[in-house]
Image 1: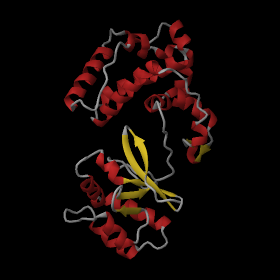
Image 2: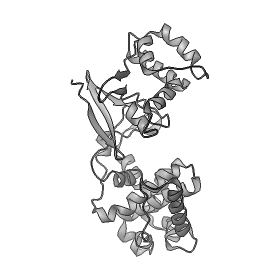
Image 3: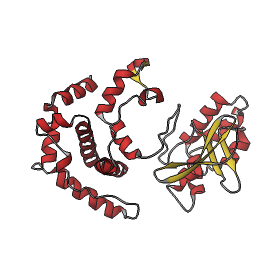
Image 4: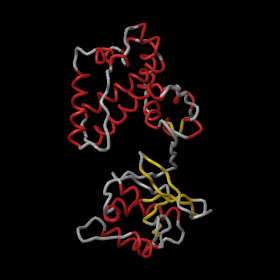
Length: 294
C-alpha cells in the first residue's frame, strides 16, 4: 500500500494518516496540535514521558511485534513517569525496534501511531478496532446514535458477546434507522451536542446531565412526534432559539451562554423541564427506558 499522506477531518480539524503494509497510521502530531497549535511536538513528548503511555506501547509491541526489544523496554518502563525521564518518539523506535510508532520528516511529517495505538489529547487509548463516521451532519448523527432510542434498537439486533455485553460494530450500527430531516430541523440537536462537549470538558456534572437528558428527550420526539403531541409533552417547540457556541468565543463567553441557557430551561416552571420530567408517562418512552435499565 502507498505511504501517501491522506487527510481525515475531525471536528473541523485536519488529521493526517497514511497506509503502510495494509495498516493505517494516524498523526499524533495533528492530534496534539488541537491542544497546543504552536508546539505540538512538546505535547507528544509529554505523552511519551507518561508511564501509562510507555506501558501501553510496550504491551502493544509485545503482542504485535516479534522483533520488539523487551530487554531495552524494561528500563524505559522503570524510569517512566519520573521527573527526570524523557522519551522522544525517535528514541522509542531506535531503542526498542518499535513498529507501532513511526516518525516522518519533511512536509506532512511528524509522529504517527498505528490506528489501534492512536489516542486523544486526554490520554484515552484505542485498544481494539475502531470505526469512524465521516461525511456530513456528524453532530446530528452523534445526537441520535447516543440516545436511548438508538440503544434500544441496537440491542434488539446485535449479537451478545462475553458477559452479555454489546459491541458497536459497523454491520449493526448501519441498521439503525436514522430519521432524515433538513438542516434547519437539525440545529437544536447540533447545538446541544456542542453544549454537552463543552460542559463535559469543564466537568460540570449538573449542567452536563441536564443537557444530556434534554438531548435524549428531543430524540424521543424525533421518533415519536405524535405520541408526545397527544400527551402534551412536546419539547422542541418550547426550546426557543438556543444560542450557538463558536470557535471565536472565549471560554468565559461560552460559559456565559451555557449558564444562561441552562438557567432558562432548568427553571421548574419552564415547559421543557416539565415535559422532560414527565416523559415516562408516554408508554413508548417508558418501555424503552425500562428495557435499557434491566
